[in-house]
Image 1 (spheres, rainbow, N blue to C red):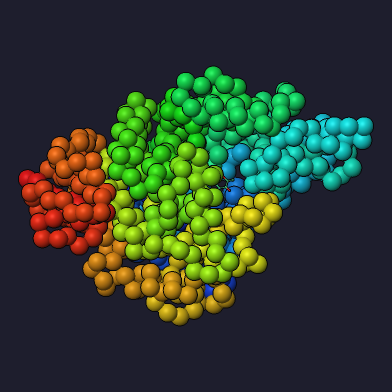
Image 2 (cartoon, rainbow, N blue to C red):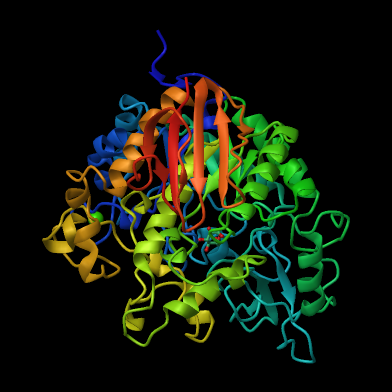
Length: 567
Ligand code: GLC
Ligand code: CA
């Protein structure tokens, strides 16, 4: 008998299509040895919690050795564990405990860049221009008589220039799309390609079921023309992301050569039974997404479509229609997601005024501005944020496809908006002249207990990012006994979903209640209705399975979602 997780059967190559994947930011999940930093043993100790929550898989953000210039997305060894987080034995212990609990493990792979402390980059710096060692990265001569000017005026995502001098008095600069501590790898170099295949097999052999591919649009580059001004590249990128404009050429972003690269990865993934899965981080237009999501490529792509929406029923409907259609056409499955380690937590976002969602960076920054209050409590309408967040979550959990949950959202955790500046870690903050507080507010360690040192995250040194004083209210200990808590809503939803999520079909339900309501049906007579307005609407007939807030007799109150069984 194969082990069965409700709709997911062990060995099923399509297990990921309907999975609930729980994202763990390892340094902030659970600290077993009390040094203030979350670790693998901490994760292992919390597997019973994850099993009770009902997730199908965990996705670990980077846990590799790293100087932590970008929260671990600066990897200095792809085939080891950061000693502050644990050892390879701890990793094996964790995967085997996950296996016993029927939870799969997905890990983050960061191929676009490594850390400047990676031995390859150190070797490159200590080698001559034109050497084999420099050939693994993108080094170019500087401009001007003394080669002191960067080879292009391009700007890094985290702010500041994209080309940094080697510091070796050799007139050369290296390319980094993110922080200067994250040199971009040269993916035209066969050695780089081979090394990552080795990394995939290394982790595949250690029981990992799949990968989340960081910056999947970045790897392949064409640096033959460095004279293109940055303003033009920005424009090209914005245009290329719009449907119909995919032919626009960009030297750094979303190049066709990536697809050929991913086909070589897929061959390695398919050496495993079931094949390893991959989900790409790729902000691209639908016609481009198809190539990353194809079964011959990575297989699945994160869609941030619904994340980039205010609490808005009409938007939700359009986004759901778009995403389901695209996933079908791509022979992939949808990825519903509201929160992750890069975004203001959604329960907080929904308690703030609406922001224009057309651009991810300005969307995040817009909310951040509302949260900047010079040490005073930010003006978040917290009850509304939580209420809307719960309603929206119950809606996506009823949809076909996979859902990604970010650690702590099941507790309704708010963004930790008031971290003192001297404790911030995000390079975003430093490279933007301290004008943008960055992403640390969603990376604060999880509260497990109501009181006590670090609210049960770890019992020793202070947590590596400070937890707000009221975090205990959101702790697992506080929420478990409360039937109406956010944690219990998630637990119940995930458990019901296992039985209900048997097929991928859904259809809109004609409710006749006007445009503040959205309702859809799934197989098994499962009806989901979200009331996005402020006033009550009548409840449809049937057995109420779960609701995101208390119901009013025969009515569905405003900003509430209900699951109903109709037959
Ligand atoms: C991705 C990660 C983000 C990281 C960046 C650079 O966007 O999600 O956290 O900073 O890549 O690796
Ligand atoms: Ca620790």
